[in-house]
Image (cartoon, rainbow, N blue to C red; front, side, top):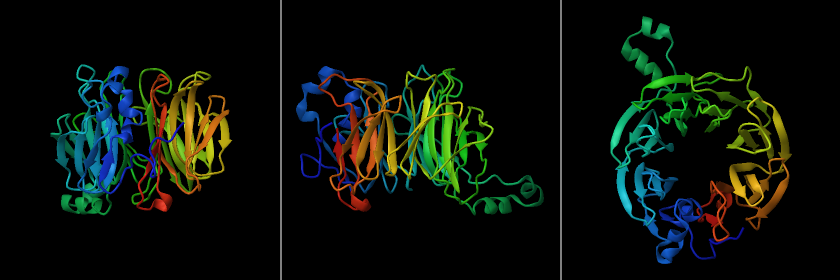
Length: 391
């Protein structure tokens, strides 16, 4: 793994307003293009885009299913831009409020693979079409009023009671709960409540076990087909005095009688498919540096300790096979095999004072000319310095 972009080297990213294509040409934009296309036009490999304000979200996605990724960027004031792989702004949308989470979903089924964009704002969801047009907006509530409130109070009083609490989404994921290619929208709130919305914005169910309005449950969310039946489930980790993790099926029902208790705060959660085991495994990292791999039956396959807070996880394909990549708060990146064997470790922060804030890996094993993995190295103590991107 070589550093191809750093503060003292070729190009950098300023969170304040600028974004460079290497952020996702790292491996994500490159992943979607044929090999010959990636090397035909080296002059078009990098570009600069000036945003209106500091960037809040950056999401690479092949939104129109043409085999080439676009990049969705969202500024802190809610301005949304879709940028092509050549750096051209395809459309803009103004949400007029901060966007807390962003995701994409295929609401039209397998016959129309274009992906809609979900913007999660305080107390509402907005869905945009592939061309940036608003399709619908729906309200999101932080609490469910008791029946007695409707029975003995006016509608105005009920609305005022609900307005005491803001619904703040922190994660959005698409889920195909029926295995039919039609996806729906799972939304995790800051309180730990989980909502599912259908293609028209209608609320299908709420999962509220152990949640309290106004609580910051520090939730983490992952979606995948854990048992190979073609229907996706949701893995949810939240914090209430200690961290808890459970699996929720497509009907909003917890699959375990009791959540798994995890020491410390869960800071990273991902799914990984190791051939050594049956089904898809759940990888969990904590602020205490603990890395645990679980199967879908609640059994812990193995624990490992990095002794440093874990900040991010990613599944990757390396020359040696599938691997779990772990980033820490001190700038290390470590790869583990399915057996839990440490394959390698790289120290990206020379002074061990900068966190790994994101990892991304190709979904396949590329040839020797392409990088397998990218890592974004944050600034020291959250300062204004540019982030560094490593391949």
